[in-house]
Image (tube, rainbow, N blue to C red; front, side):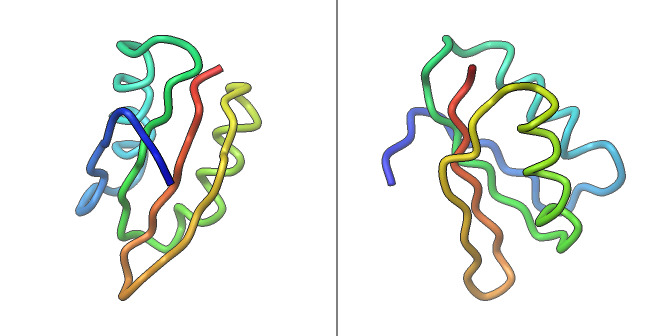
Length: 75
């Protein structure tokens, strides 16, 4: 899936992944896609909730060998 930006959230815990993702989304134009990489299983629930609350669009997500990938379009 195509994306314009990538943010690495691996190794971060608690609120740090969301803070880092929010900072990345603030600096890019609306409509662009960010690929977020994470390794915490809690992000499977956190990322869809975050996107709903911020009106960003979770386009797709998958996982491979413990790596979670989320494609998010900025609202």
